[in-house]
Image (cartoon, rainbow over all chains, first blue to last red):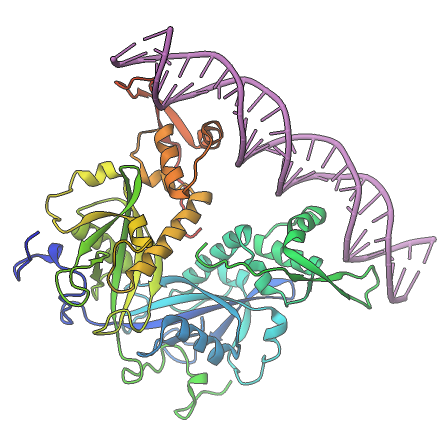
Length: 240
Length: 240
DNA sequence: ACAATAGTGTCTGTGAGACAGTATCGA
DNA sequence: TCGATACTGTCTCACAGACACTATTGT
C-alpha cells in the first residue's frame, strides 16, 4: 500500500505515470483496410500495387497513417474515402498487428479494419479517381497464387476467417447487398461467405423474419421473377 | 498507373511509402489488461488504484507501454506477469482504443487485452508482490458505484459485453475454472457470465460432450458429492 | 428421517436439414 | 411446351427449454 519510490522495478510501475520515451520510444500507427465485396460470384478484396520498395510490384492492403488529431475510426473512414473513393460503408475494427518484422524499415503498429461494400456501390467509382485500387479474389491470396506485401497475407487470412464466423451469428452479410435485394441474391452471398451451398427453403425460413417484402420484382429473365426485400432493423453486429 | 509525384494529394499516397513524421507524429502505444475472474460468486476485475495525477485515487486498469522490441502479445504477457504476478493464463486481444482525449497529457493508443484466470490461481499470489492490484466487482464499475480513470469504464463495459457474447458460442468459460472442475461449479460460472439461471439437466447435456469424467469427487459437504471433469480438447476461441 | 445438493428421464417446442413439389417468367 | 429459376409444404432429427424424478451425502 505504500507509495512506490524510484527504486521500484517495472513490476510496481503504474500505468501512464512514468512514461519514459527512452525506454518506450513512440512508434508509428497506421490503419490497414480490408474492403471486401462480392463480384462475379466470388469474394474479392480491394488492394493496391506497390510501386516502391520494399515489396515493389506486390499487392498490399490500402492503408493510411493515423494523424495526431484523428481517432482510429476517423483514420479508417478517411482511408476508405481516399483509397477506395467510398463514403458511408460498413466498417469495424478487426485486429491490431504489432509484429516486430512487419516493415523492414521501422516499427509500425497497424490497426486493421474490416469493411464491407456491395459491389454495386463500388462500381460507381471504379476506374475514376482511385486508379491503383483493384479487386483481387481473396481465394487467390489465400492459396498463394498472388503474393502480398508485408504481413498482409496473414491479415487477410485472419479477416477471411472472422468474416466467415460472423456470418453465422450476425447480420453482417446484409452489408454486402444493396438496400433492396432479392433472397436468391442474398443466399448467394451467404453461400460464398460460408463456402457451402444452402437449401433454398431453409435459407428463406431463416431470413424471412429479418426482412420486409416490398412491391418490386426482377424482370426480363427467362424465369419467374424474384421479389425484393429490405432489412427490417439493422442490428449492431460489432463487438460480437 | 503512372508513378505518383510529389504533387499528389493524400488520395494517391501509397501506404508506408511517404511516411512524414511531421504530418503523422508517432504516438505512444500501451496495452491495457482486463484480467477477469470469478470470486465469491461475482465477476471481478483486477484493477489498481492511481496514486498520481491525473485521476488520482481512482481505479484504473493495469497496463504497460509497449517496448520498441516487443510485440503486442509479448507486452500483454509481460503486463500480466508484472501487474498481476500471473503466468500462463488465457488472454486474447480485445480492441484498440484511439480516442483523442483518452489521456489529458498526450496521445496514447491502447490495445486492450481480455484475460481470464480461475480465482484459485490468482489467490496464490494475492497480497504478495503485487500489492496494489485488487479485485473489483465488475458490476460496481458498470453501474457507476466505482469511478474509473481515463476511458476505462467504456473499455470495461465493452469487454463485459464481449465476454457475455463469447460465452454463448465458444468454450471461453472453461478458462475461469481450474483444470479439474465439477459441473455445478462450471454451471455457476456460466450463469454469472450470462446473468441468468440455467437448467441443470440442459446444461449438463450441453457440456457433457466437451468433457471427460475423472475419478475424483467433492467431499465433506452435507449432500451428494459432485464428480470432477476435465475439458476434452481445448478449442481455440480467439478470432471468433 | 431430513435437508441439501448432485444427477437423470422425459416431454415439448423450435429450428435446421433434406427433399419433393408448385409457380411464373421468356423463348 | 419447355427450360430455368422462384418459391412453398412437409417430414425428420437434433437440441434447447421446462420440469419432475431419483441418488447420495452429513447431521
